[in-house]
Length: 450
Image (cartoon, rainbow, N blue to C red; front, side):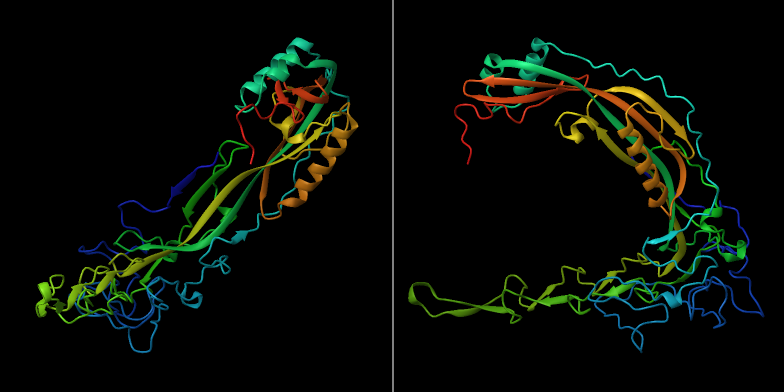
């Protein structure tokens, strides 16, 4: 079972170098002023100088404010701003990659979590091959005719359309007991991938490059936790955050309503904007115009999308006008499982995998060597193939540990005859499960199969 965790690496309330002062409070400028430049962010009505500073947004900074109701928001001249394109058909879009900050070691990071970071190379430890064959008892478990019939009756009772008469009256001629071997290989790996993420900038501390060099993805020490359990963890890469104006609303905090074209109203669909409706007379009398009761004679209705404001809250920055950008690291631990079943009966292998059996052997090492001395050579061959496949299957994941095991599952094949038909069914596992595709009464009286 996997679970997701959010673990941002942010400083506390203490002010650290490279952090902007909290809104409404004094403090050192961010970034530190050079040559007498104004601090960032600028106060209301004040424009910072055009000099570009590390971590600061390109161009002039403009505080977010709600435009007056009923007025549209026109984009700046020239279309898209320096921070990237605005809304397209009312949908938020991503900024251009060339406008993002360059972080050493993360040049290939985009806006989607598809940038897998290759793990460092290492010399994997190999488990020693056992010198002697393991002490495994493979005695075949036998069941009686009464036990086989009781298991079949329990199976029939779980199917509402199966008749019980055949299970009670059939003649069981032969029961053939065998053992099935279930080999399972588990490889526990970890992968790390990065993507640019953003969140509205509300004056929170910013862990920018001013605080140090960003560590590489595999240089961060992250506890693995419990082995052989799927888990996902997300965290902010230290020293990669910076602030820039919202690319979606051009730092305004609001966007033009595309439904009413920023007018704040729509044409009344009851009177088609006339403000009045024609009403026919009663009993052949002459008709007359009456004021539209829907729009009260104005011919307009308040826009239901923007509530008559003419603008919508920017879905990206949520009216704050600025965004905190950072590189998000997603760490995924995955337990890769491969199964192989060896059995002499014609029972489908996936049924053996889910049945209760006896654990014959189990090994757990950082890197496994294939089984070589198991009594059944088919298990040894399957182990060699699956271990080799897993060694090559995950080049972008770090292998933490491997585990393989062999279970012995008892299988009994029963041959029966009922009236003019013959068939067979299987009783398998210590929980006495049944597989009966030849059962003669699979549809009881009253059921109709279309």
